[in-house]
Length: 597
Image (cartoon, rainbow, N blue to C red; front, side, top):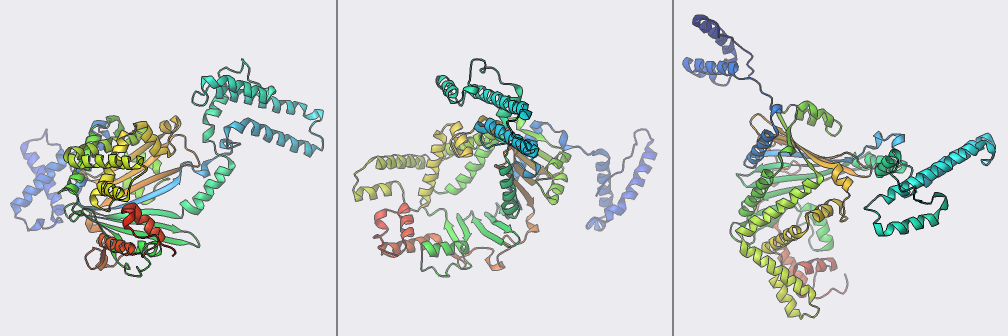
């Protein structure tokens, strides 16, 4: 119900104020009667309710959340995120992958003449000379005729100026050439081409034109780059879509995910779905077995047949080898680490956003998504540089490891002992079979919950011991080094839409690149949150009797693995299966090597 009544009674007598209030109340009563069961209340309660509604209409003004300060925006988002942990809801996520630079927006003047900057001057010269040859051919005269002397000289001088500018630009790049090699570089360039030899006059500040050209040339696409980007977009990215939907019910200890990927082209339609059911109370994860049956029967178990058809695969997370209550402690530690990380986040990363500012995202979002975002009462944005984003992940791992170490010092100490034993076993070149078995037992190289957690703790410890910069470079670039341009030009933007009650309605995450490359991709994630009543089925692709795993419609993966291992020990199985199991179990317990398939 919307209240627009405003009564100015400050300067009127009491009788007039009373009469005016009664008149306003009479106007509101028809609206009040439309409320559920309000007409069944006693008259006194009805009048009281009407009076309260009128008072609310008179004293409450619409306040914009967009006027909030960054401190208030951070506090509001923190409260919303913490509230979301204890609330039950359903969600739907859409992941969109697109070129960081749209090939349709590339103009001719934005194109580069070559892939490598090292050959820019040469290729520019060759293209100019080819144009002159075509002009001479059209005039039916040799290109060496006097008519084209001025143009030939202009092309030559342009090439010399470009080459000298590029050499000077290279000379001034501290990351590319160190001081010890600069003299050798000059000599090699002089020997290679005397016409563009680097002399003392070339070591000068490069002109603004060439400085901007060479500094930003790596972002210039070629015609071939644009063509490949258009083909990638038309034949792979546009026909593809990735979704995830499910429900989160913390009180019931239930969390579901339906991962799906589709590819819809004119003559090719592919859809892959993977339901996932998490039962936190029993510490089990269920996966839909049909998606793994074919590969398992082909490479691991030739006798599998159709026993996994329309079944769930049950993975028990705690088999009794972990300390009591470890799963609950791990979840609490996860949230504690997130809270500490959020508290230490700079306030300037957060700011309220006016909904109209979201119109700039129209190209990356559907009309339905954008209309939902524009209707949000409050929108909060968090922006981090790419380096800060990965640094925060590093800090999260460090905090989580610290909390677990304080809670379970014995488990961490055993993990450290495992790592020492592994290192000693790796350095030793002459170990007996018995010693190998003993070390495998000591290091927990069996398929148990404890061994998996120890491997997780080992990975976390390795990450903590790694320098922050190396971690950022290694995770992000995949090659061990990340250029300054990439760290400075890229940032991560997260947008949150909050309802009037403080609940998060939607979340949007995407990368922002000030100088995008046409061969790089951008990932946008839009997630919407809804009440559970809106989605009665967690897995729309499964029948009703398969929505919840139970003993009748699931296969215990641990029991199946034990039975399969016994068959391998007796000499059955495949070569690939024997290699895989030898990485989990003691090699001498897998069984004799197979002679043939």
